Image (cartoon, rainbow, N blue to C red; front, top):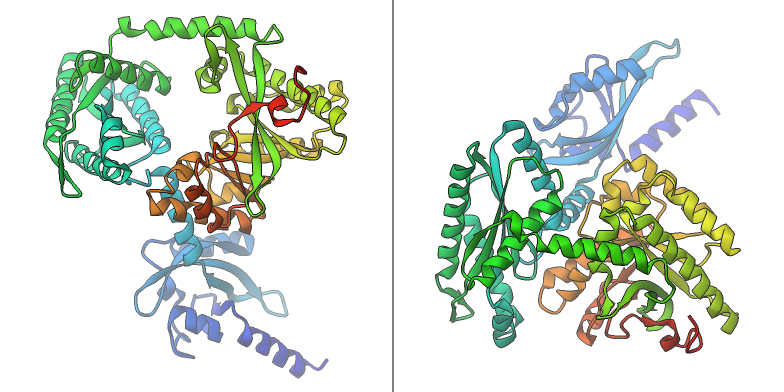
Length: 563
């Protein structure tokens, strides 16, 4: 091919490229732009020639000199920047810049490729916002609350200043909600949230933890505990007063009160869950004292701690016998055909007083160091159950999902333990799904990725459970070898009353499809929720609408009496 033809071909390729392409000399003076670049930055053809590349820079972005320094050191640079158009508007661009050399190998300028990624950035920011804020009240949610509480503990430890955690629970809210309807209850919660916000100082936090429960962080109350407690009490009294004022909802005047528990701290307790637990204990004591009360946490309130220790001892015994911890299964259905395709294993603990649910003992197992033993027992029991199912039905191909504690997952020998259990059982992990909550993603990402790849090599599938309430970001999800996302039941439960819940689920489903992940909605309780889900692109669902979790024999998977 002649040199002239080659140049013409290259020119045509650059000229027709959808990527914005520019060339600037070593002084940063623009020498060439293709039509896509002119259009992206809002200039007429040829108008940019002779201008300095600083014309593209937003004041909010990295300075050109820093990019030039990076290119000088490595010959190239790439990243995401805020760029400026001719009309002054800014947009996010993905930018790649390379040093260009002449035939003798001397640098002559810089070539860049860029394209607008504003839509993607806005999408990521929206997902991030929704993941950290309550959909109904737009207050911080549990995730953001715990993050801020942890930062407050660190700050209090350094400064020696007291802070406070407050737990608020509306008195008899359920009766109001049942009598006047969920829309009225939802609007009431919004107004209560706004009134609490108006009672706080700048820098303090109020979060909705779920239902009618709010939590507050009061920061920097001073180094003297009595003075700090008086300030916290004054704020709590202000909150009691503003909530007591009648609320106008849907033309109705509603009177509501709240009970408040306060726990003072100065960074001595590293366990943020304990800080909240103590405030919660005090809140329930205030309800016992007649509601619409304020109560400070006192050490003698820790009778519940004794109960936890009792459960800890009982759990240790339960893992040594054969008939106390039982696997229940909840069917998971393909939404389009509404046919069962997998089961989630849910652990139940049979005691003299009835069945204990996992939320009453899993946290205790984690804190007492028993979670690995418990989690390993669950895997062994699942493998034994699957063997029984296959003996009855050799054609059984449905997947079985197992919940894995984030505490257990972080243990150094987690994968090796699971591999050893598989080898001892003589079974593979094919057909088994491990469900991990987003909280597992807050630690060493490289270790998480390594473990997940090792688990995938063993044959496990991996799903993120309770998705949308935790720590995931698109960048994290792209790096993880996942198979699916399980949409948190709080979004599903809000489908009947909150239009934004459907939007959140649609966003999650769209994102999952772009990453080739399946989506499962949990907590489907009625036909209305199912019908709304059908329009979101969700792949699978589970919940009481079809079946609660029940023993395998009740599902016909094994014969009655087999365990």
